[in-house]
Amino acid sequence: MNKISKIIALMFGMALAANAQLKGLGYDTDLKEVTGRLLVGPNFVDLGAGIKFDNTDGIASDAKFQMSLSGFFLGHLHDFGPVDTYFTAGGVFAKLPQASKNIAISAFVGFQPEVTLLDHIVLSTRFGLDIPLMPYFILQTAGAGISIVNGANFKILF
Image (cartoon, rainbow, N blue to C red; front, side):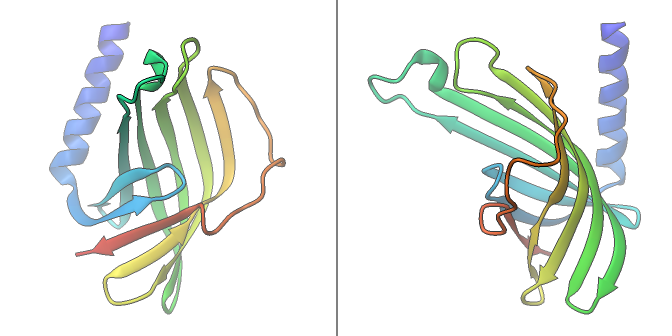
């Protein structure tokens, strides 16, 4: 069953890459990832990747390497002049800087308003329901405030 799921994921990724066009590059300050925006039909997919390697003396070997990957589907909802609103759903995979339980997987469902600052520069933030799936499943809607500065996504669109 594991091989079948890998084959299905590979086929989905190849189909997405074959039908997608790169529409922009940017940076997600909340996830600390470099992001790319792909156009898939009338909607977008934001893919991100982040990596940190620190070989400083005195750091535990588990904390020397960290990485994260993310993917978010953006379904266009409304257009209010320079402000666009999107429905977003996606997930984040991260390798954490600790010895045990160092893999984190979370799902996200919510909204992503986006403001066009100049013709090709956009600023957006996500808010909604973040569901950690691994190492522990937690379902909550309260507990952390929304920070537009820490959650800002900057993109340069082509």
